[in-house]
Length: 113
Length: 114
Image (cartoon, rainbow over all chains, first blue to last red; front, side, top):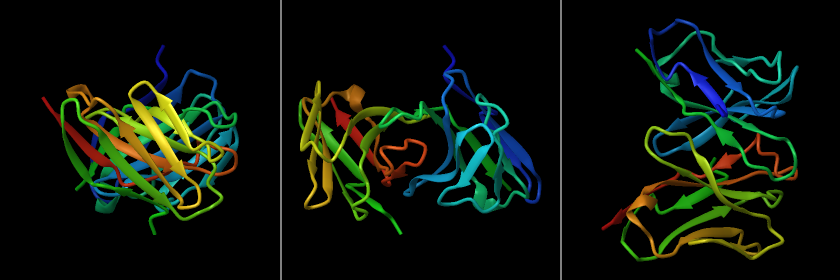
C-alpha cells in the first residue's frame, strides 16, 4: 500500500535550472495539493487540484507550475530555480468528500545554490 | 499574513504530563480544524480533527477543545509520552473541509522528557 509517493527525496539545483518534482498516489483520490515547509512558517499551499484537468493556485504559486493529466499524478515544475525556493516540498492527496483526511508524502528536500 | 496563529513555538513536558498547544484563527468561514503530527523526515499525518458545531472531541489521549466565539482551538495531550515527541501543526479549511486547501499554523515542536 504505497499511498502518496514523492520523488526524488533530495535534490540540489543551481540557480536558474528547472526541474520537476514527482507525486503519485494510488488511492484514487480526487484532491491533490503541493505544499512547501519552511522553518517557522508551517506548510504553505502552492497549487492544488480537485480532479484531472483542473488546477488552481494556492498561497505561494509564483515560480511553480502544475498539471493534472491523470488522477494518479500531480507533478510540480520549478521553471527557473531560485535560492528562495530552497525548502521541503510535500504532496498531499484527499478523497474529496467533506472533511476527509489529507495524506502526505514523505517530502522532497530541495536546495537551490 | 498568518491566518492561523499557533503557540507555543516549542514545548517541553515531562513524561505523564499534559501538553497543551493553542491556535487562533481570523476567518469565520473556516469550518474544519485538523491537527497534524509530524516526525523528523516524515510527512505530516492526521492526528484528530473537529468541526465548529462541536466544542470538544476526544480520541484516546488526544483532545481538541474548540471555542467558536473566541475563534480559538487547542490540542491537549494527556499522559504525554516520549513517543509523542514531534512537531504538531494545527490547520483550518473552508468549503466543507476541502482538504486540498489547508491553512496551517507555524507548528509546535514538542519534546517529552522521560
